[in-house]
Image 1 (cartoon, rainbow, N blue to C red):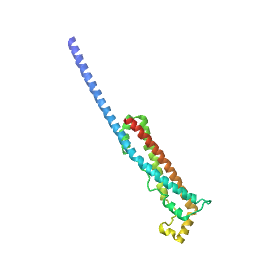
Image 2: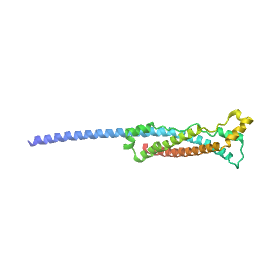
Image 3: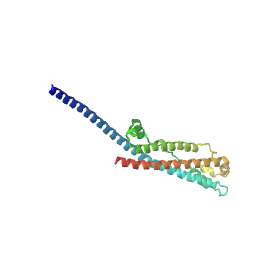
Image 4: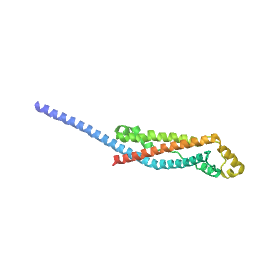
Length: 219
């Protein structure tokens, strides 16, 4: 009787240990899969950021150049400055940047929707990554829309190109340039350009910070 109980106990213990071991193995396998997928998320996010960084730097530089020309236009409109029509028209053609920034966030969205980045990732790293997409990219996009809209506002239209050198048109263009409305629109454009540049540089700094953190995490 005792032998049967002992044998039954041993068999029960063996079955119990086998089930517990299988659960542990399965849990370990799932943890390993999550870690591998999270590592893949980090790699893909890093690739996106490394692609976005030079793109954002180029757009910031383009806007900075356009802003520099806008500032020079405003300086020429100062009552204490001398106004040179030809120089002003050249600056006018260079005071608009052609592009605004739209970041790539498909890898980030996929990782967040899976829960890996939020629940299984390094908390500090996840927070810093989130700042790029939820804060900096959002503000850059928003200010980029304002800048695009500013470029397409109904400014008093100047005649440009070869016709702008005709005597009558030069005078009419000059009269428009000296109006209160035109000057206020140029001031608005300069302010929005300047704010957009600040938003871009803040985003650039955060991207560089996160790329460094991702390199450390992946190493």
